[in-house]
Length: 92
Image 1 (cartoon, rainbow, N blue to C red):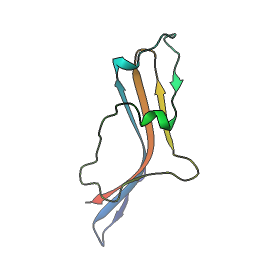
Image 2: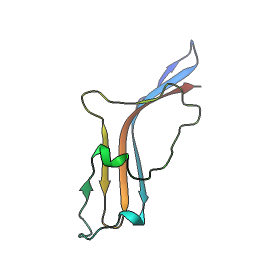
Image 3: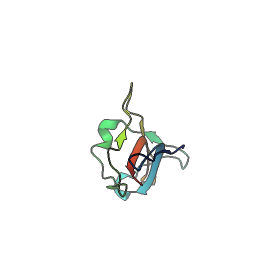
Image 4: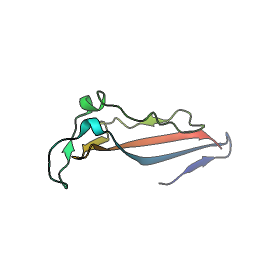
């Protein structure tokens, strides 16, 4: 992650892979402890996910070039791993 600064307009911008994990007991399934299911982006729209925001973020966006640059994996205990490539911009 390399932040970019603009002293003329006092803003910053950086690219990152933002990752979150949470556990939803409603998503438990029978499987071995090291087994994970990769979920489609359509399934991501159907499950609960945290409403995360970046304080003072302006004109931030998710990268969608060629593919969605997002990943969702589900563990047998209901733990969800979500990863997304973001560009965050905001005032200094």
